[in-house]
Image (cartoon, rainbow, N blue to C red):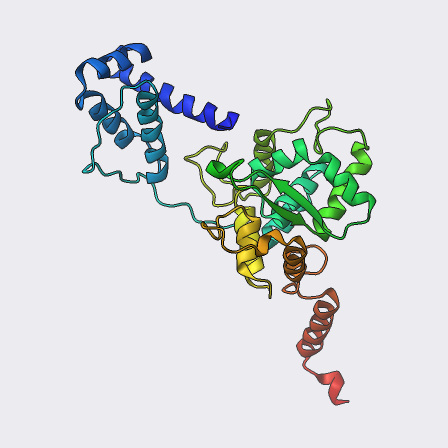
Amino acid sequence: MADSTASNYLYCFEYWVEWLRREGFMWNPDELVELQRSKGGYEILDLAERFVSEIDGRVGYKRRVLNVIRSFFLHNRAPLPRDPSFQLHSSRPKAVGRLTVEEFRLMLGGFNPMYRAIFLSMFQGGMGLEEVQYWSLHGWDSLQRQLDRGAVVVRVDLPGRKRNRNVRPYYTFIGSDALEAVKDYLKVRGRRPGAIFINQLGRPVKKKTIYLYWHRHLKRLGLYPFDKPSKSNRSGRSPHELRDLFRTRWEKSPAKPSVAEFMMGHTVDPLEYNKAFKDEDYVRREYLKALPWLNILSEDPERVPRVALEEERYRMRRAGAGGAEGDR
């Protein structure tokens, strides 16, 4: 289990224990286990189900909290009984992704070299905060080898997402825009071995710091109408939306969608009959097909070229003059 997952589980369980005390139940964890062992039944389960029904969140979050509580008793050999009739209901609407390519370009213009490299890498590699942090901590040697041989795209090896961590390892790539940003950042950082992305003290940048930096810039641009980021304050423009943007842009390219799913760490073929993704050359070729749609700074096919814009402005100016000059 990842440290971040363990920390999240502990928070969920302690949150429930605090709720129990506010409700007048002063049991500590050991007493909860002994009570369930001695009595069995539904008393503790009823309290757990009442708790998750009252907390704010989507169904997935509530289910995760309930599973954490169940897991605690299961691992202490005092399992809670099953309750097939219990149903969870969301207390908030689903967040809708709103981040656009234009907004992302606008944000990139205000980032310092390190964060520009981080967020472009996340976008072009379909990575989340957890993945870019892992790459930063473990990818230095591989990055240097690929840069030294002049790689056009850089491979990023990852251990697997969430429950598939260290079960289904996979890899992704970053392309031209991200690679140029990384090279620019390395001119500032230097070539001293260690984490790829480091702060001013030379320590690895953590995903929480990346998250807060992103939201600070959202707010500065007027794209985040809340005082501070939290699970209840959702603008639809979190760093996770970069994965959505990656997948959306890929879909518009001629590259195969299944390759994008693989590069995002999704389980494309649960039975692993399809061995195509083990062929790095094949995956790289498909990535290169999609790259023009991912190079939103340098060669975006959907972006109107500057020359075409100037020609259109010139045509409109002439049309606005009434065409008088053209009739002479």
